[in-house]
Image (cartoon, rainbow, N blue to C red):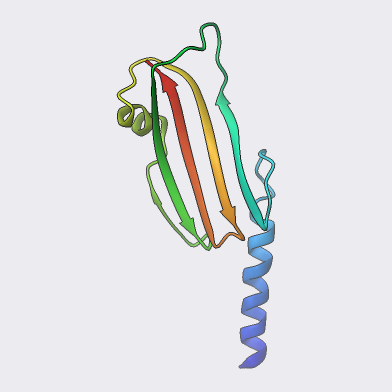
Amino acid sequence: MKKQILLLVGIIVLTLFVSGCMSNEPGGTVYANMTSPMISPTGDTSYTKVGTASTHSILYLFAWGDGGLVKASKNGNIKKIKMVDMDIFNILGLYIKYTTQVYGD
């Protein structure tokens, strides 16, 4: 029984370390708190409104939320999107939060 528990824990830890390998974003397996541009500005970069929307995950097993552009635009009452950023917050894969920030008018 003890060997099975150790094997299960080992598989979970390995999954946590390998799960970010397919991402094109830099990140930390232990800790990450960063912002990446998703849609870069073209032309006028001034904006009057900011909308945000988030998704959350625990242990890469449970996830919830709507972090899409449409939701963030609605939350900021934005009709014309000028820029989009993605904030990523991760602690050991225990808790992860992705926040879409939409800038526009």
